[in-house]
Length: 235
Length: 299
Image (cartoon, rainbow over all chains, first blue to last red; front, side, top):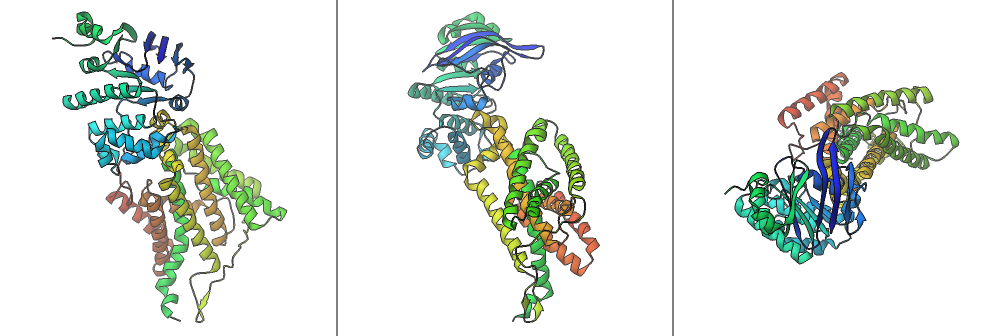
C-alpha cells in the first residue's frame, strides 16, 4: 500500500505537484490520469526517489520513502517502468531481465522461466538485442524486468504510449491479471484515460499538479465533467 | 633452425606485437572507462604514470619487484577512485566536452606534479626477466623473456577484463550504469559506487601498462613516458570502437605491427602519419569503430 500525503514538488519557480494526497491499496490498480503537464510522471519519479519533494510524505506499508535513495527504494520492492520503457537497447532481452533480477533476492532461473511463460515472445527473442524489439515487445520486456524482482509495488508510466489499440487492450488486461495474481499495488499513469479506467479499481485525476478527483474508477469514468474537462473523453 | 623465424617479416611482426599489446592495453583501459562511465579520459596515460611513481617509491626501501607492482596497482585503484569521486563526479550530465577539457587539464597537472616531486630524470625500473633477445641458430630472434612476459601479461589482463564484462554480474551492472544510469538506479543498481569502480579498474589496467612500458622501452619511468603510448592507444580505441574491448586489443596489436613495418621499411618519422591516416580512414568508413555493432549510444 502506498500512502501519499500533501505531496508537493517544485522545479524552481514551477510547482509540478501541489498538496497531492491519495491512497493506493494493495491488490488494486490506481490510475493516475490527466493531460500533459498535469504532474503524473513527476508523481511516479518522486515515489521512486528520482525527484525530491518540497513537502509531504510518501509511505509504503508504513515505511517512509521520502529522502531515500532511488536504488534503496527499488530494493524495498518498488518496481518502476519509466516513460519510454527504459529498456537497455544494447543489452539482449535476457541481459535486461538478469539486470532486473540482480538486486532482488530471487532465483534467477525460476524468475526467467516465469517471465518467459507470462510473455512468450520474450522467450523466443531472449538472445536478441532489445533495440530490435517492437514497441509492444519492449513494453513487455520493461514490465517483465520490473516483475522479475518480485516487487510489491509497480509504478507504470504511460505503458500504452505509442502502442496500437489492440496491443494496448491486451497490455491492460495483462496488468489487471498481474495485479490480481500477485497482489500488487499498481499505480498506473496514463493519458489514455478510457483504457486505464477500464481496468483500474481507483482513479486519481491531476490537473496542473493538483488532485481534482479521487474516487473509485467507475465513478470517475461516469462523471461527465471530469470526462469532458480533464480527461478529454468527449462522446 | 628454420631461417623463417629470424626473417625480417617475422621479426617485424613479433616486434610489432610486443608494442601493439601495450597500445591494446591503453586502448582497453580507455574502453573500460568509456563503457563503465561514459567518459573519454585524456588523463588515462598520466594517471597510471603517477600511480606507478607512487608504487615504485617503495623500491628505495628495498621491496621486491612484485611487491612494488602490487603497490602500483593499489595506488592506481586509489587514484582512479579518488579522481572519480572528487573530480569527475561533478561532470556527469554536463556537455561531453567538459570532462574532456577537465581531464586534459588533469593530465597537465599530474605530469607537472610528478616532475616536481620525482624530477624528469628517467628512473630505471628493474625487469624481473631478461630483456636479451633469444638467438636461433646464431641469429637474433625477435622475442626475449621480457617481451614474452609482456605479451602474456597483456593477454591475461585483456582476458580478465573481457570476462568481467561478458560473464559477471558486476560487468553487467558496470555496462548498465554507463548506458542507462537512471534506469539502473530504478532497478536497484548502486550506480555511484559502480562509476567509482569503473575508474578504479581502468586506472589499474593503465598502471600495468605503465609498468611494462617503462621497462620495455628502456626509457625508464618519466612523467611523460605514457604520452606517446596514450596517443597510439587512443588511435587504437577509436579504430576498434570505444564500445569494444576486443576491438581495442585487435586494433592496438594491428597498429603496433603496422608501425613496426613502417619503421623498418619506410622511416620512423612516418609512423605517426600512417597511424593517423589509419584513424582517418577508419572514421570515414566506420565512425563508430570497426568492431562496434551499435551506431548510437546515450552518454
